[in-house]
Amino acid sequence: MDSVSDQTTPEYKKQSTFKKKLYNFFAEVYKIHLFIVRFFKEAFMPPFEFKEVIRQCYEVGVRSFTLITVTGFIVGLIFTKQSRPSLITFGATSWLPSLVSIAIMRALAPLVTALIASGKVGSSIGAELGSMRVTEQIDAMEVSGTKPFKFLVCTRVLATTITIPILATYTGFIGLLGGYLNVAMNEGTSYTTFMQQVFQPLVYLDFTASLIKSIVFGFTIGIVGCYQGYYSNKGTEGVGKAANGAVVTAMFLVFIEEIIIVQIASNFR
Amino acid sequence: MEKAKVEIDYNNEVIRIRGLKKSFEDFAVLRGIDLDLYQGENLVVLGRSGTGKSVLIKLISGLLKPDHGTIEVLGQEVNNISDKNLQELRIRIGFSFQNSALYDSMTVRKNLEFPLVRNRKGISRKEIDIAVETVLEAVGLSQTINQMPSELSGGQRKRIGIARTLILNPEIMLYDEPTAGLDPITCIEINDLINEVQQRYKTSSIIITHDLTCAKSTGDRIAMLLDGQFQREGTFEEVFDTNDPRVKPFFDYNFIK
Image (tube, rainbow over all chains, first blue to last red; front, side):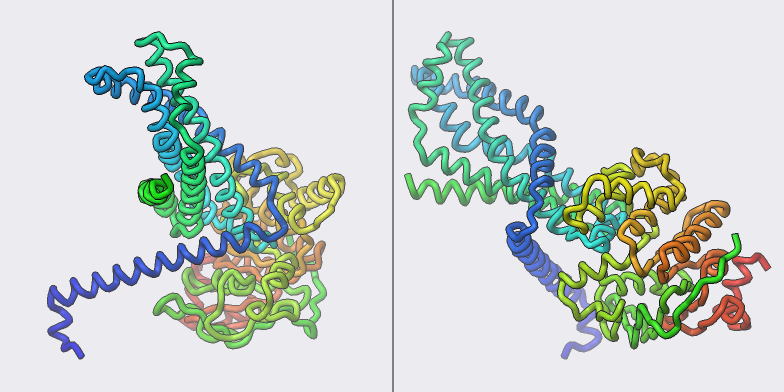
């Protein structure tokens, strides 16, 4: 047993803080695990909240549509512009459409969409549920015979999982449009030729991997936003923390998932 | 308004609590509570802030789990029933929250419709409209039907919160600090509304408060929560007929003696 003097040493305190942090970390991981399990248990059990899922899909889509359109277009335009000098060196500017399409369809479109949605949708879900928790609206739902988890969490997670792949596909085409504008201005390539060159290097796996990636990103953004909001601490500070936590955690996880999925997809090439 | 005489059935306990204990980390909030609520009765639970009054009604409605003891509501033990039965039991209990807990994103009409639509499957549009109009009329706020909660005053929000619970015709009402943060005139209106609900809807209620005016005008019986236990119980006069230093300042402050 430690003596009293041992317990007051800086080394002991440091060790004890580390143990506490480690314990809290694993406790949090376990809590998230239970949250995800609960989602799968409740989301696919009747009664289904179809109306609310559709309403949430609309909310997610509308909230991010303008931002995604502008960002997707600029990403396509800038990427094409910045890639040109390198290709000019090798006299390979004709490869630009293929390069742009591979970059956008394989990586940029799902990633840019997920990052924008993390900021726009994730934070909004975190803040909304956090504020509902703080003002006892979630408790009010529970005592009035409604299952708040099913109504608030399941619908939002399903909505992000469904909508973000659709938005990512849209971002891809808008990005290609940005790329086309740059190519057309510099090389005078026609739209038909550009599109033929764009789809030439793409294979079925590229679309499948991108789709799976977007579904995973959508699920992550929804579940992280809901988790942060649903378990937000009391007080207005908790709402801010929930919104912030939703964005930071979702963005971090999106990058981790990107690496993992890219690695798995590479094994199939 | 003077509280009208109500019929209380002292042979019929709608809530029966025995040996209830609840702690948060190392702090014991409730330390062995025994409590009965009789059919048709308004029971006021008085106590200082942080003594566990709100915790008590959250335990009754199953929002919190007790560490020890039993809570029987309408013949069912709250912590020993399935989720489905708990959900059905909750429909029979109305819970009026301290800050009203109205859904910010919905109009007054949608707020009132929400519990009805979700719990009465197959209910027609006409029936919903009638139910909404009836409860709004009962709380005297028919004109607010299309307003958002943010457009309402504190007193109006409280009334709508109560109306939202009444729409399911509950047998038991739990009021958490119904007059907190309201001006004296609005407090009187809310007290009258609580009494009106008791008579019109034949509810049995637990009213959590530290407002003695509210306690005096709504309570058929008062129970005072001190140090995690009910130390004094009876009529308003019986509870405050004491020199107990934990109780007397309460009375003196409220009635400015």
